Length: 122
Image 1: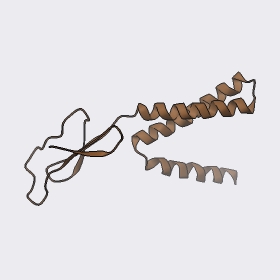
Image 2 (image 1 turned 60 degrees about the vertical axis):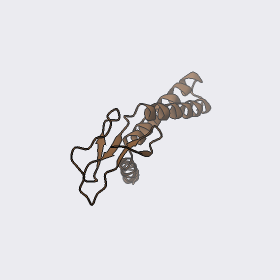
Image 3 (image 1 turned 180 degrees about the vertical axis):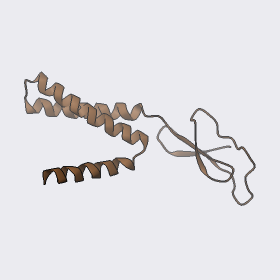
């Protein structure tokens, strides 16, 4: 019975992570690794005291999440000539490769540092 419960929990966590952006996945992984390492160091530093493990785990999880999110690759997006959203390198200005069809006015977007799409001139 315990194996079934653990399998269901693992499956639910896998589904939750599947819908995350790479930055969110990195932050989550960093939090898990940092929390585990922080708890281990906290327990060792306080000779097995649970309070030390909890404090170390909390500090490690927060630090790991911040480092994981900060080191995630940034994604920028633009619209092509047909209105489809395409990923572009963030250091490259979006350009049109063909004139847009008359029914689809062209619009280009790039993600800013906060993750919001900002319209830019194509």
